Image 1: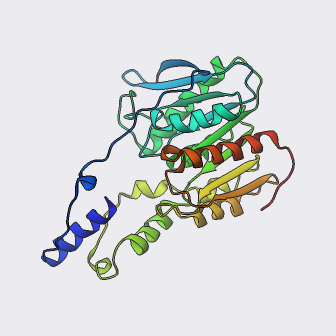
Image 2: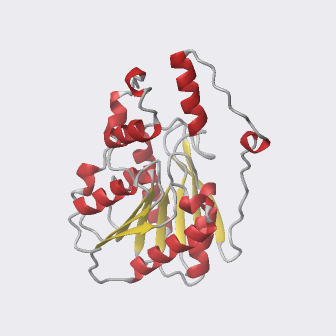
Length: 282
């Protein structure tokens, strides 16, 4: 899709005709449906966010759980997208997983906004604290855009450790990177992106500089959308005395959503991090 978009931009700017053969494999983009492992007990609840909107939440539990995991989705996914990752975790340990869909995602109604997704998360976290009924360690995991949400939640009581996965440093730095890496040099002078000023508030640099809780940063080595150096920058900026950076070689941005092997690797790193109390620097 990215390559086709670039071709459209070139055609629009130059008025030229570019021939590209489209095969059957270019036409179809199948989406698989996944089912949760049978060891999980599934509970769905709709949290009242305002007078007119409700947030869809999932609480997935196992017998004899070792910890709680709060999973915050990325922009191009929702809870259901993460089922393979949840299964990978459940195959290696017993745990409880709480997640929810931002407004406008999944079965949540309303419209997502930058302030709104953080507000959704606070409502969801308050609800989770009411129902969890245990004193297990609670791990907050933010994937991609969910990392921004996590960095606005980690100060809440009850959050013991933080995991950032495939997370950007700032939208401004991401914009510069994408312009440089994904748009042909000859096109760049003619391309003007009019990005609303509010969007630039998607900035994780200031928040990460205050995060002192145990931190694990995981990034795919082949992530061409949010490069691993952004994850490493967040890791370097955190003042946590218990932090670790893990690069999953060969993994791209959607490593835990579409790659069963990489999901298992990431799940293993998270479980090891949860069980480790030692100070680790890498």
